[in-house]
Length: 206
Image (cartoon, rainbow, N blue to C red; front, side, top):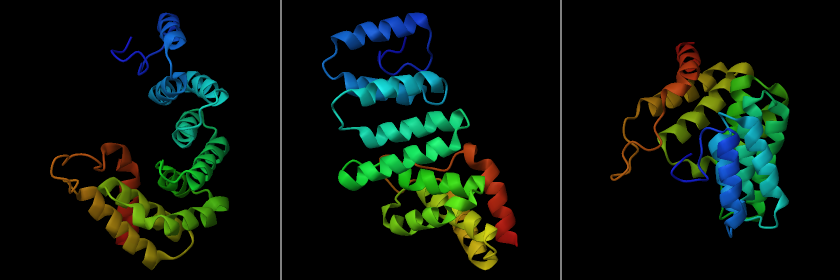
């Protein structure tokens, strides 16, 4: 079991029993359910979804936006893309009501749409990209924003604009410093984007 009983990255019957025992004694059950759901979203998505369902069943709605994003993460692992899109939209709707608690849904959704070539959602993706450009801070955010634009523009036949966005995405991917003095390595583009980077190189060279 994790040192933090609500941040387990593995899950079995013993871990579940220990978690539930701690949870029964906890005052803020909702935050522990949400955090544990997040920790398991990629490795144990079905467990994560059940934990998040338990979170949503409670009355405290403070962290709903992030909980919807965590739900989307788990759903994507299970291949439930349409349901994941709905979860991202729910996160964005929540943010519109409580804008002080914001997530990465504004980028997660258009990046998903662009990288999967979901043409039926292109207009929505472009709307979100245009609306939230001012929120970009870290290199990975600039990378994903320009990458999503590049992929959508390329698939829509706008090759010149796609090439420009591809170039800017690749520049962001090459950054080795976040721009923050005390956190130089936070928010950089990692190897998990290698496949997208290859596509962007092709678009830039076109």
